[in-house]
Amino acid sequence: MTLGPLSSAPGELEPRRFIARWDLDKTYLRTDFDTVRDLLRTAIERPDQKRTVPGAAALLRELGRAGVETHILSGSPEQLRSRIEEKLKLDGVRYASLTLKPNLENLLRLRFRALRGQLGYKLPALLLRRCEMGAQEDGAGRLVNEVLLGDDAEADAFVYCLYADICRGAVDETVLADVLREGGAYEDSIRDSVRFAKYIQKGEVVERVLIHLDRQSSPSEFRPYGARVVPFYNYLQAAFVLYEDHRIPPESVLAVATDLVIVQNFERSSLSRSYIDLCRRGHLRRTRIDELGAALERLVAMRRAPAASELVAMLDAIRKEDAPPPSTAAQAVPIDYRALVHHHNPRRKRKKRRG
Image (tube, rainbow, N blue to C red; front, side, top):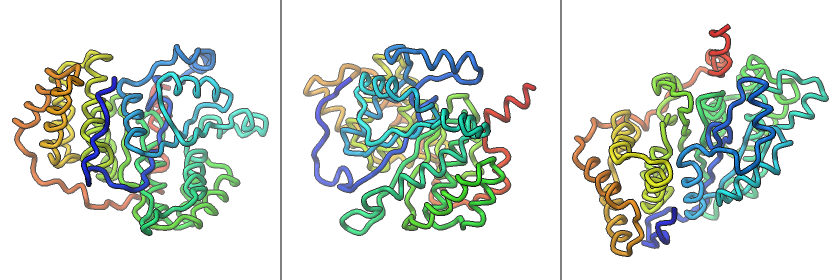
């Protein structure tokens, strides 16, 4: 759903390069892969049959319109590339790169752990992508920052936080190698990760780690990773966070909300609860609400707000909500990766419990 051109007001968005790194399965696509039958069904689905997580395509389109550079890193096998590319094209999503898992190569090399493992695949891939950037700084000498989006079905929170702490120089090569080894990575993946980490310019690169709660995990499960990790239930929540961080304009938030109302039949109360929930968990500071209201007024005046009544009700409810106590979101929490590595994959942990 298009709500009109982005605002061109000076200072509204930071004029600097910014990167979004997205997972695919259960973050963008509604994919089931817990059984062999699920994997086979996923492999033969046509692009138009693949289902998108509500709001994900809308947010990806808005990131593109805001000039954010999107890189997709997925555990889906390389053999699905053409189908995935066609699905992204159908959804109107623009992206800079699409990295898929070389499962056929892993199978031929008898690397069976790598077929399902994510740590030994995603971490070196993230580090390599960072190293491959033409420049890790912008023209003003500032590090190019990133937001990472994943889900609670695999090891995304663990991998993303480990990547973020490597980038800021908080994880040395000994700890990195130990964690990868304990996490089941193969030795060549460990060597690659240690080597790539040396070429990364250290600093606060990762601004946010956004985790889609596909399995309805409790947000409290992610507390060991600190306030940088924001578990979210729907993509309007992700849009609110990115908006407050000045990464997308107010029109983009309204576009995602409109998509959820018109395409997914979201109720107006669900829109406001999305904002209030993040406030109560300390992930939003209640800033830029007036700008959001002003953007909606402009769109209504131009008759480009097809879900105007729902959006007005959303803003009214947000304004009436009492402000939460001051957040401690800026405080960094040291993460013991050696202690967490054996519990980093929620899906495997659940399977063991069922067994």
